Image 1 (cartoon, helix red, strand yellow):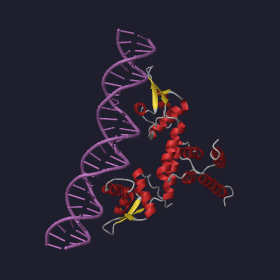
Image 2 (cartoon, protein in one colour):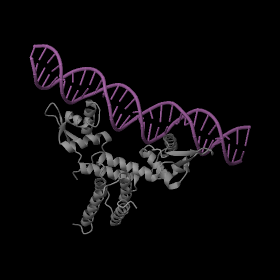
Image 3 (cartoon, each protein chain N blue to C red):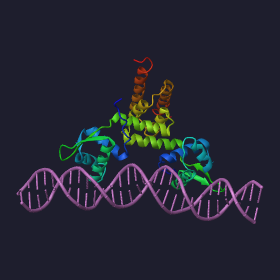
Length: 132
Length: 132
DNA sequence: CCCATTCTACGACGCTGGTCGTAGGATGTC
DNA sequence: GACATCCTACGACCAGCGTCGTAGAATGGG
């Protein structure tokens, strides 16, 4: 039992996490620049959120340089599982099928995407029934 | 163009909406009772949220009786589409496949559910390519 | 050495969501 | 008619989130 359950990131925190997942360990400046293309928020806002994320255990920081270097502790797959699971429970009665109906209804998927979903289902079914 | 876009319900609002979807038009008392099995919140809290939902246009109320009767305006399918679409965009780069991976990973689906998703894909593919 | 720049820390503010308490009007019962 | 009960309206409160401004320490260029 070494796994701690990392708290759910807020919307702004998720955006920063996504940058860290993409870039790897980064300074506040780097994260803020990466984000400023889509968002126009102040530098200290980014800093403040990062500090809170450190308290929450979502990220870890290396303070050996003057510009602290932040690194994601929350893993992408785990965070996504958490978010999907929560919506599943709160809005879809824990029915993945119902969630997919809504998702595919909201964003019209390309035939390629549909094929990919089928492939993923194959993988899952291949794995589940005869336990490995 | 008669469809207005109803605002996104908050978590508490979604719970009340779900009761209304299940029960149909109901009084505050009825909604509160229905909810009190799982939640222990005050009567006036339910009332207040309902009032705010009225302002937001999520519900409509009939004031002809002393006990006002509330009715859902936001439709279930549309609301679910909205919620799934938002998560899809914010956390999954608009990729339904990635969302499904996370969802199925969070809640181990039964073979029946997987089959149901396949059926769903069949429906969609049957509908899209040759436009009916 | 001094000044401009860059960084962190910290407090403030506004907003929203969820919670409740209380006031006061309507209703029902004896 | 009087009283207890149920209803709505409304304001208060608190916590969390996102935003920013400013202070003050570290750094680096002339």
